[in-house]
Every structure is written in structure tokens, then in C-alpha cells.
Amino acid sequence: MACFLAVFGMVLTGGSAVAQLVIDYPRDRGTVVVSFMEVLGEIKDQDPGPSVQVHGDGYVIVRYPRYMKRAGDYALQLSPQEMEGLMCSLIDQKKFWSSTKR
Image 1 (spheres, rainbow, N blue to C red):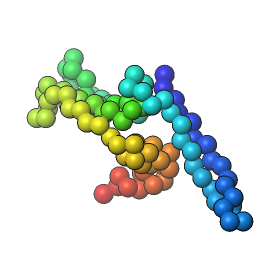
Image 2 (image 1 turned 90 degrees about the vertical axis):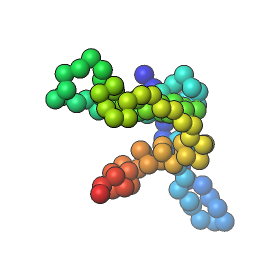
Image 3 (image 1 turned 180 degrees about the vertical axis):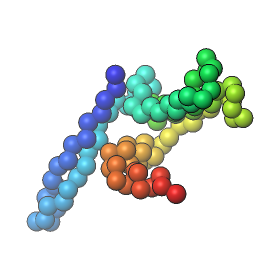
Image 4 (image 1 turned 45 degrees about the horizontal axis):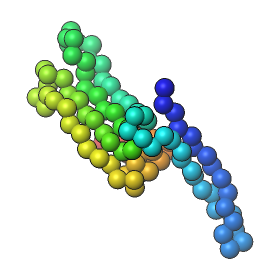
């Protein structure tokens, strides 16, 4: 089971306090830090629904089942800045959910 830690701290800068967010999680390929799978109940198939796995080092695997037009496995590598942005978005649920609304 993967987990990550979000720590909120205060930093004094020029006499004023500034809030700082520190996110810590395993940064290796062997650890999945974010996982999403859609289960399509209408389709009775051995092949599970589409899924996304993000590993601690930013390696991403996207899987589309064989019955979908984009069937196959796709991979990409997130930069450290992209990983930080993703993790911050997931922690800041209000920001994350409002950005996904269309």
C-alpha cells in the first residue's frame, strides 16, 4: 500500500510568516503513488476498464482495454515539476475538483 505525507509548516521570511506545503512520498518506480481505474458495469468482460498508475519517480502507465478504440498500454514520464503539481492538485481537492469541471 502506497502512501504519502503532506506537511504544512511555517517559515519566517523577513519577519513575516509564510505557509509552506511539503509533500513527501516514495520517489521510486516500484511504488504507485496515484492509481485510478474506471469500472464499466455494463460491459461484461475479463479485461478491466481504463486505468492510470503514477509511480513515485513520475513514470505513468495508461491502460485502455481491448474493447476500446485506443486499446493498449501507453507510458510517459512526468518531470519533477509536473509530479509536484499533480501531488499538490490531489491534496488541494477544492482546486483539483474545480479544475475538472467542464
